[in-house]
Amino acid sequence: MTEKTASEKLEEEEIVIEVDEPEPTIEDLPGVGPATAEKLREAGFEVLLAIAAMSPPELSEQAELGEAVSAKIIAGAKKLANIGGFVSGKALLDRRERVQKLTSGTSSLDELLGGGFETQAIVEVYGEFGSGKTQVGHQLAVNTILTENQGGLNGEVFYIDTEDTFRPERIAQMAESVGLDPQAVLDRIHVARAYNSAHQILLVDEIKKMSKNLDVKLIIVDSLTSHFRAEYIGRGMLATRQQKLNRHMKELKQLADIQNAIVLVTNQVQSKPDAMWGDPTRAVGGHIVGHASTFRLYLRKSKGGRRIARLVDSPNLPEGEAVFTVTSEGLQD
Image 1 (cartoon, rainbow, N blue to C red):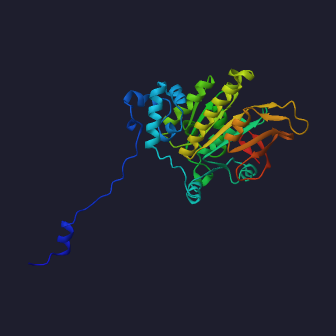
Image 2: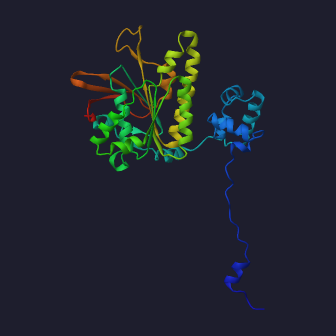
Image 3: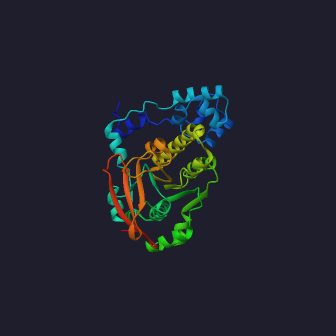
C-alpha cells in the first residue's frame, strides 16, 4: 500500500465548523405567539433581560397582557436571559473606551465636562426661564452632525419638544456659523411635539424603533418635567408622578447605553421655601431625576448677557463653573 499524501489525508478529515448559537428572542419565550410578541415589541420590550427584570403587574399593564400570562413570560425570560450580570472591572473599562465626547462649541464648558458631553450618559440641564437651556440643546443638536475630527459625533438627533421651543431658524443660524449646510443639518434632526406625559413616554419607544435604521447619537427632551408637573398636581399624585418619571428616565438611559448616545434633558426649577441660606433654586423632579442623571448642569444668567454653568453632580469630575455667552452664532466663550 502506498502512503497517502498530505492533501489526501486532509480531504478525509472531518471538517468541523463551529456555529454560534443564535441569541434567544422574545418568540422563544413560552406562550409567546406572533400576536403576543407584537404586543411586547409595541410596549418597547425587545431584550429578554428587560422582561426578566419586570414584575407581572408591571408587564401586564405596559404590554396589555393578563397577569398570569405575564408571570409565565417573565419566568421564561429569566431562564433564557443571561442574568449573571457580573463583569470584571477590566470589561467595564473596555466598555468605557467606547465613550465619545461631543463639543459644546465653547472651551470653558468642554473643560468643565472633562472634554465635552459624554455618550452613554444622561445630562440634566436645569435653570430659570431664559438661562439658556434650550440654546444648549440647539447647539448640541447642530454639533452632533459634525464629524468626529471636528468634535462632533456624525450621527442623527432626536428632539422631543414638550413646550414648543424647537426653532429650525435657530438651528440654521448655528449650522451656518460652524460651516454646515443648514438644510442638511435639519434633515438629520428629527423633531416630535409631545402633547402630554403619556405621549412623551411613547415617543421614546418610537426612537427605539427608528434607531434600528439610524445612527442615533443625541436625544433631547426639552423639557423633561413640564407635562408631569402640570398633570400630576398635589401631594396625592406625587408618588405616581415620580414612578412614571423614574420609568421614563430608565428607558432614556437604556437608549443612551445601547446607542452609545447622549441624552440631554432640560428641566424646570422651583424655589425651596425652607432654604435658610444659599441659592434656594432647586430642579423639579427631586431625587428621582437627580439620581437618574449622570451629569447635572445648573445654568444661571449673569451680567452682560453671560451665562454661568455650574457642574452640580458628576460620577468622576469635581464641581466647578464655566462662563459662556449665547450669541446669534450660538454658544461662545
